Length: 327
Image 1: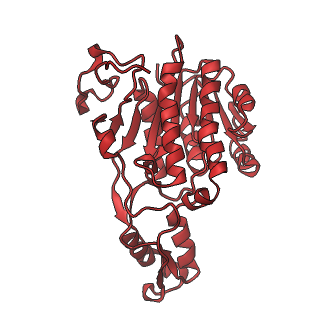
Image 2: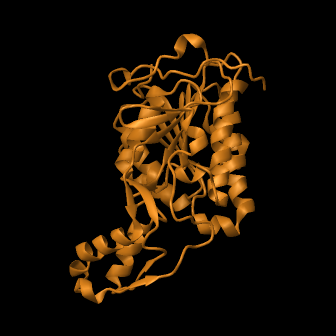
Image 3: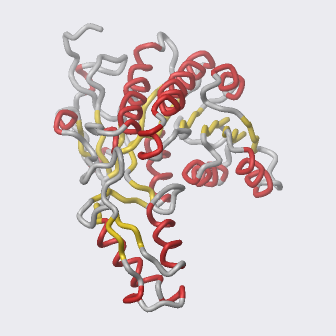
């Protein structure tokens, strides 16, 4: 059963921009309980006010670095969405110790708590920067993905399913370029553009949330799900936003200057959804790709190697044939 109706659900990082949007969607699906786990006290309080008329939402203050707190949070939980992370590329370049503690150790803590509590499904959020990473954030998220995939080999006879989703840039999420450009336009400019030719994959928060829920539904054993996303040039986005918002701020678009500031530490010119090496393990579905695990897991059996098609997208994903590789 993959429906969230009647389930006890935990969302780590549930007070963030993406996590709170996910909570909205989960609440609408009649779960028994939604537990929002976050280290941001103010944001949790705001959610408490928002859902004050609901008796099935819980607000848990805690940090994913604290395994014992996570384990308490997961008691009797059936479904975990692990969203908590440090994600600002440049800040993480200057603070890699902290990034490892949250993105790597925090994910390991969440996995271990999920195994000990024998949850049914565990979906972790990753990023396109994990594909051939060049930044601290991307490298930690790739390692986070590998931890989640490998958890399927640690679970013994437990029924827990572990998998990931990869996002591109989520529109209007905290730290994203869209709210920054809006603020700069409102102030009369300049709009700071790293590199006009820089390209990024982009998706609205609603699609990010639906991808997480779809991953929960499709997940079998260690897949990384990647939504098919359009790419945009940063320069094109800046031009479009100036044209769209300058008048509202009381300016003529021609009055808003752009300042080229160059790539910041950890940023690369072009992101990738799936690396060349990963493409051998990728399977195309109707609106997404599924990167199958390279390591053996309980679901890798010759009887499940049928190639998926859009008409069979609601069935469990196929896995690669069993290999002779030993861990």
